[in-house]
Image (cartoon, rainbow, N blue to C red; front, side, top):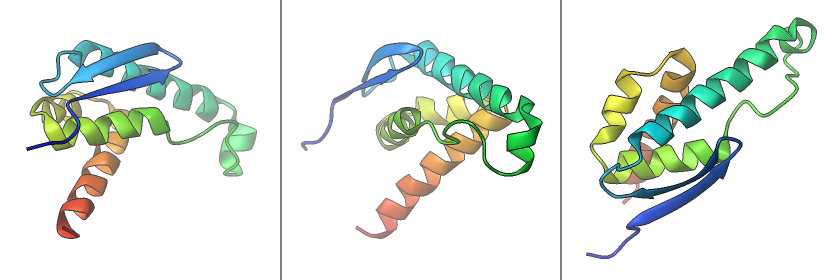
Length: 106
């Protein structure tokens, strides 16, 4: 069966190459922590945050793409979600919902 066997993601935290078996679990955890940190910085700017105009992207698209890949191909996705903070759970759940929506349309 064909398909994607590896994925490469570049973010503010660096460049990560993932295989189908989740060899880079810690790197993905660092990406989620970085995402959470950036959201925290945006939340701290109360004037913009309270007006719903945060000074940055609420979705880390590279991280979301990587999580979609992980949830489609590797059993480590659930471990990552279960050990994440609220921000990590949010983006993991978004990835899971995209994966399940894609499965329903097949």
